[in-house]
Structure formats: structure tokens, C-alpha cells
Length: 593
Image: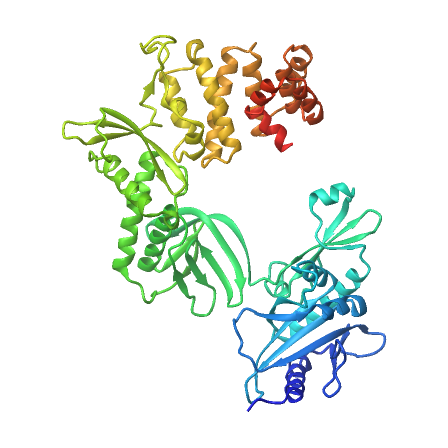
């Protein structure tokens, strides 16, 4: 038999009073029999335990809903809230604490959830309405803290934020463009948190209730910029040398706190800093990270000890429930893949979760060819020499295949410094064997963007055998433009690709310091590297003053940060020249500006 709604409401109030009775600086005034139109009472908040007029900080309006419906979710529940209520919370009360009390059929308490509705939250909720006639919105409510200290923090900070937001000029998000358009410049950015004895700014407890971010202008106008949501964990990371057993590595170590307590985490290994020192290990991250974690965990299981930066950290005699055979299997499996990646010089951090079946087949093929030295079949191909793309997890390995007498291919890594190529002489079928080049310059723009194993070291080694010179400089310069475009489009190995561009532009400029093209390309590469220094800026200004080329003048002005003047130069070009200029990587810098 379902309980009467009035009885449910009275029971909800009774249950809600209990946790607040343990908070020494608050006094509840919840209506049981005669609820208001929009609110069901108030919480008086005082600065101390003496509840006097002088110590009264403020009153928090409350809305209390009781329900015998099923609780769905532990971290939060979704509830419908009337839009007219939200509008009144904003216009009449300027903020409300909204509680939903879940009970069973006998009206015994199951859980209490809450939602903080201050002006920022209300405006944000109303802004997300889908249509004009909408009556309700669905919002997420979080479990009400059971700790009296957390309830005290919740009430004190509600009053503090209520005062700040009630007097703000603007409540809501301000994007950089909005702030720029309105010429808003903030003198201070702040958020307020209450810290109690024993709590640090990096403790979790202060942030379990969330926080509001405020910006204040030099004129004293305050804006609510955003809200930091309630946090479930907080941590900081730093790099350390970690040693367990015979295995040692440098890695990121995170130390923090979540709802279960303090923890220390290395990849998939978590150490609970509790009385029993609980260790857990899961496979997470890339192949390299998984191999490192497996070896580190094995070292800890075998030795029971762990060291940080050469200092002994702790000991645990036994680690329970460890499947040693499975641990060895993981080390072997991940070791195979990491060995292949090292053999190919793969920079990209391949993650097994990103692999599909086709990627796994290609990985097996590469392992057989480059680690086991096996000649492999490549589909139905039977050409003496073929170049094909081995696309894996959004990246690419360029491979050259040489057919053997058994119809299989011996594979070569096309980024290898031991390989070179040459183009045909213009108007002839004969190769220009006097100007060979590193095979890196035979790739396409898409190759440069997807390449997983491009490195500056391999390029420098290859250039020592096949240097850039007058006979191949123009061809290489054109390839450089494709490399820069690929970098701007988000190359997989962006840092290494830009380093290769640095090597190429430096060499080309030294080959012909009087070339405007080489100077522009050198400068735009340094621009991307944030290394365009005063000497280069002076050189650009001198070149800009003396050039007769409209395209060059537009390029110089882009590099000098004069976007409007650069655009005016581009407008002087005819349609064909303007379209051509828009394909050059220097134009990407103008677009970003």
C-alpha cells in the first residue's frame, strides 16, 4: 500500500533534519505541515557555535522532495525540476538548496541527494531549455555528504557564493571572444574554498562540494566565469625513477586522494596508502606503458620492495591473488610489440585499444618481416618492387617490398637512413643518380601527417650520405611545404616532423642565403617552433622593405604578425595567384592569427 504524499513529505523532512543536527553552526527551520509555494523552509548559518544575531551569516532557502521511487545510480540521480520553480528561485530567493529524500515503502531512509541552485546554476539550467513551452528540465543531483564538516562547508560556502553572485554584473560563461568584444579584462581570477585543520589545498574534501570561478575587473565588477564541479578525486603528478626488484624505469607518479582514501598511482598500478597497503594492477595505456607496468609489478611481487629516486619507500611481504603465468604472458606479448616499435623507430604511442582486426594483422605481418626476418605475402602483388602503406591505429608505416624467388616480399622500412631514391631527369627516363635524396622526400603530405616513425635522427643520418645540394634543392623545398602543411593539420609525430623541417630549412637557407623562398620557409619554421628571434625579425623587416613580390610581402607581414596588412597584400593578387597562395603553409599562419 502506497504511503500518503503528506506522510512522505513529513518523513522526508524528518530524515533531512538528522544530518544537519550534527552541524554545530547551523539551525534548520523546515516546514512539515504547511510547505510554501516554492520553498520548504530555511537553514540559518552562523559563523560559530554561538547562534546570535551578531554571528548570523545568512539564511539558505531549501526545497525538500520526498519519494519512494527506486534510487538509480550511486554517484548521482537525475530528477525533473519545474522551470517555473527555477525562475522563482532566481527572481525571489536568488538561490536554493534542493533536496530529494529517497525512502522505501515503509518510509525508512535510503539516501538523500542534493542540488545547489545559485544564480549561476539556475541561469545555466534555464539556458539549456530545448523549446519555449518546456515545463521541466532534467538535472543531476549528488549524494548529500554524511560528514558534518562537509555539511558545514556546504552551508558556509553557499552563503558566501550567494552574496557574490547576487551582486554580480554578469552571470554565465564568457568565451575569450565575448570578453574581447566587450573589452573585459580581469585583474583577478579567484575561487573560494574553506579549509579546516589538517586539510591542504590539494586535499579532496574541500572540492567534494565544487567551487565557482570568479573574475574581477579593475573597476570592481565581478563575473561568474564557470563552476568547478564536485570532484571525485584529486591528484598531482611528477617524474621519478622507480625501482622494484631488478626493474627500474623513469615514469610519471601520481599521488592523490579519492573517496576511498590516499593513493599512489603509476600507470595501471595503484597503491592504497591504508593500513594494509593494498596493491592493484590493471592493463591500461599504450603498449610501452603496459610493458613497463607489468615488469614493475613483477619486480614488486618478487621483491616486496619499491624505491623512488633511490630512496626506499615501502615493503609488503606478500601480494595476494597474483597469476604469475598471466603476468609473464603479458610481459612476453607486450615485449614483442615494443621490440617491433623500437626496430622501426615508432614514435607514436600505439594503444592496443585503438587496434581493429586489420591493424592486428598488419602488426603481425610487420613483426614477421622486421623481427623474425621472414619474407611475407602482400595480397596478390607480384611486382619486383612495391611500396605500400601499413596503416595501423590511425598511423602509417611506409614499407618497400622486394620480391624473392618464392613470390614473397622482403620488407624494408622506407624511413630507414640506409635507403635513398632519385627522380627522373626532366624530359628523360634516366634517373638523376647525381642527386639522390633520403626516401623521406618521396612521401606525400598525407604520409607526413600519418607517419608513425619519422625521426630527425634518421633524416640527419640519411642526409650525411645523400646531402641537399643545388640539383635536388627545389624538389626537397616542395616536399618541405607538404611537411609543414601536414604539421599544421595535426601530424601524428608533430614534434619530430617539425624537427625535420628545421633541419631541411636550415640546410636550404645555408645553401642559398639570398633566396627569398628559403628565407621565408626558414622563418615560418622558426615561427612554428617559437624561435623567431630579434635577429630574424630584423632580417624579415629588411626583406619586406626591399621585395618586389606581392606574395613575399604578404608572407613577411604574416611572420611579423601584421595580419590586416598581409590580407591587403593578398587582395592585390589575381584569382589564380590568390588561390595558389591559400595552399601554401604560410597561409595557415594567417588563418590561425
